Amino acid sequence: MVNFSPVFRCGIIAAQSRFLAVSRAVPLHVINSNAQMNSSTIQRSYKFRIYPNTGQCAKLNQCFGISRWAYNISLDAMSSAYKWQGKSHSWIDCSRAITELSKEPEYSWIKDAPRTVVTNSLRNLDKAFKNFFAGRAKYPAFKKKQNKQAVSFQMDQRVNNWLAGRMLKIQGLGEVKVKWSRIPSGRPKTATITRTETGKYFVSLSITETVELLPKTGKACGVDVGIKDLAVTQDWQSGAPKYTRQYEKELKIAQRRLSRKTKGSKRRQHARIKVARIHEKIANSRADFVHKASSYIVKNHDFIGIEDLNVKGMLKNRKLSKAISDAALSELHRQLEYKSNWYGRDLRKCSQWAPTSKACSECGSINAELKLSDREWTCTDCNADHDRDVNAARNILREAFGGSLEVTDVENDFVGGCYAAA
Image (cartoon, rainbow, N blue to C red; front, side, top):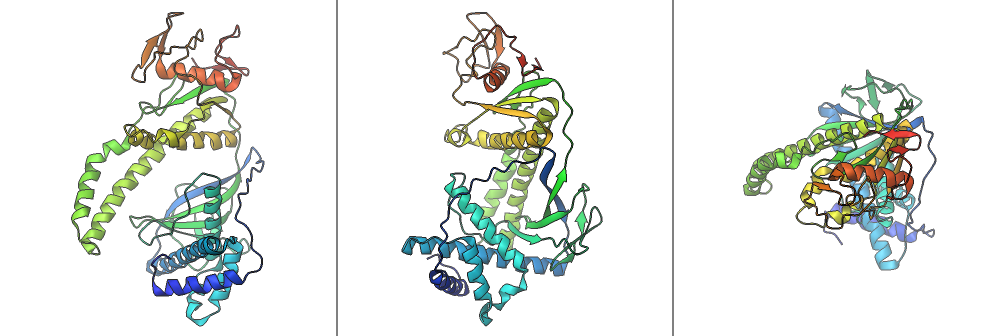
């Protein structure tokens, strides 16, 4: 068993005794939920910076601890029950056991946080197990106090706790000071407060709202992703800022200073925050760039073709893994997918094994001798000059919507009634 504090170990033992007494064992399985969503009604999250006062910070720290404790004790109990007895339990069983545990005098502190804090924490654990069994993530790990903390509150729809752009009240905290960067149009159902490793507080509001579909542009494009340029279409190149490389020297110095500090000292804590700030700056810059690139593509094209890449396999290349991670290829594809669904665009994927870079977009012949370092090449059959990425973008468009790289009598740039920007 993991070496936690005595109180935590007692909690695990007590919870396990209750789990083992449960006669109904619900197996952990994957539920593939692909509900059809209205093209104009979406679930959007708005993230705002908040500035809690001293009392609210203390209450949030308490909620963070209870949420983390509920997650860890449930994870350990569920893993132990399956390992030693072969039984599986659901998050509902965990919730019932924690409810019984909170009735004992030594665990009355569980009631100091709203009940929805524990419930949402267990729902997150259930989601983590589903992602693991679906192959999307590793086995759930224990949460640590030093990492980013998050806690979710349920917004009561019956009370006056919300006025867009002016007021936000959360159960147990009261009114919170919010820096309103945008004004949401709906009413939030849940509020998730996070504290980053740099000590900043943010609130994420889940709101159901209706969006208007973007007007038709009459254009289609294929999107070729890469390291030199994050996204390339027939007429546009996004570039690649490579933020990790930009802050690499600064990060190296900060990490060296952190390694010299004594563990547990205040100076080490200050040095850790400096390293976290650099990582935060890199992550924010990358996220901003990817959002702008994906929004440009979706707003300016009705039909979008992308490759179904195996980014996890690409990261096994030791020479390119750092650059591939910095490019955020999977995140770009994810954003293109949900933004296309939001705004009524038609996005399709082509196979990752299609020779989109080696095939000539004019005649369809394959250049088997093309190397990764060849950025420009000339077709030996039709003498057409190609830019590697632009040629790949054209082939991705044809493969995604036509199903073949063969060039027919139909005009190459015509797809589904829209003309590719060329």
